[in-house]
Image 1 (tube, rainbow, N blue to C red):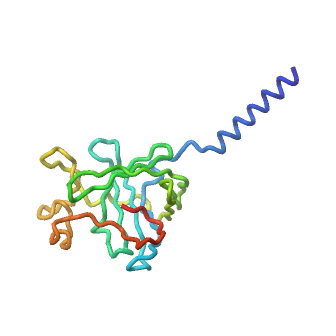
Image 2: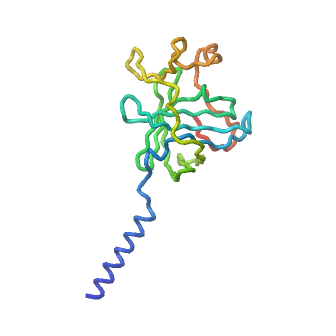
Image 3: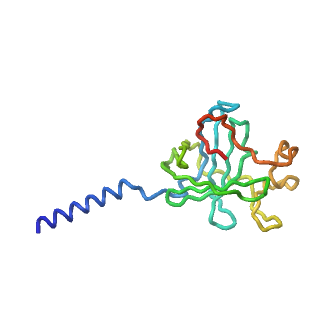
Length: 192
């Protein structure tokens, strides 16, 4: 009987250790805010790469909205790349707005490895991205969800003369999506 009790007690201790070493996941609400990391190997090495995870949900209610920009590539917040995101346990999904096609692109998947009040870290299996939190929940991104002819949701900054948020440069060259060019250097921001 003593032996049976010791075995059962040992199994309970092992079960508790296993559960405590394997966190169940993170909450979406903890990601909401403005996050940044220093840029490296860019035109402006003193700038920061920003990612904003907003609380506002898209028209489906499945995803939240966000935006990102890289001061190292001389991109400011007004020119930010828009995306939708969701966090399920530890799996982060981001879908970027493709201005050329005027549709949401292919999802990118990451695993969140750290999420605290001040730090965020996630990886895609090849690279880890680490950010510091610089502000709590921000005002919603500079878009309102609206529809185009195909019924797809379209980000819109409220500018009737420029509904696709094109900058003068993208208007001149027919549109396009700016992507970070890191010149082959290891950086801390996701590549688009």
